[in-house]
Image (cartoon, rainbow, N blue to C red; front, side):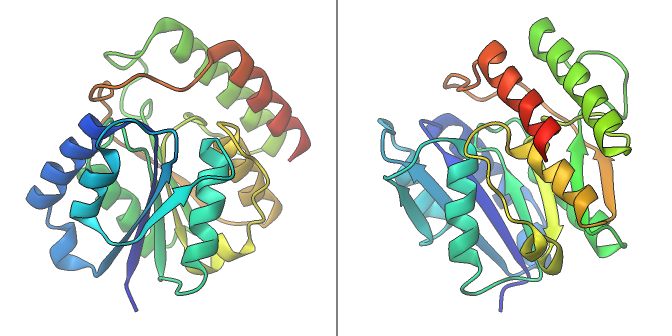
Amino acid sequence: MSDLAIIIPVKDEEDGLRFLHDDFRKSSLGKEYDILFIFVIDERTNDESKKIASFFSEEIIDQSKTTGKGAAIKQAVRSWANNPTRLVVFLDADGSYSFDSVRKLVNALENGADVASGSRFLSSGRRPSGMTRLHNFGNRGLSLFSSFRNRRRITDLCTGLWGFKRESLEMMRIKSNGFDLEAELAGLSRKNRLKHIEVPVDWSQRKGGTSKLRSLRDGLIIFIRILIT
């Protein structure tokens, strides 16, 4: 059984995946853990994302009947459940997080966290370089509302880097289909009384491609997800 599964949802992210492939080759993570990569590739993808994903893994799932990040993650989790690993990480495909940051999440899980997430704001209160003012303001506002709603402080609700112990992920019944996924993960951690730890991580602008986030529309959906979870 693999020690660690890394789940990566993908739509038109060939540049980000190239970065991740090079970064993984430099990382010691693959020497320390038996890693299962699970990619979910949106069928609307028009670049070489699928080809580059095949350099990592043969576990590539076609997302053909659904759309959205949350839906892709749910599809991957159903596949993972057939052969579960001890630890699981959800990682964005755009190259904005490195495997050094993945390692920090894994360390937090190994040291007692049930759930861990990477925060772009813990190490500095300033807006990260490359993040728009709108995204910075929106994320901080949603993080504050989530902290109030869940009675647990979170500084970076919309982070694209989350980690789980097997038992913790198995408790979660994810319903979200889009970018409200992270808001639901924070709420489900509270509902299931799981120990959630934020870890300071480095972040950089996406490596090519375009963001799929529609700030105002998705921000409202995330707000509603915080309320109902």
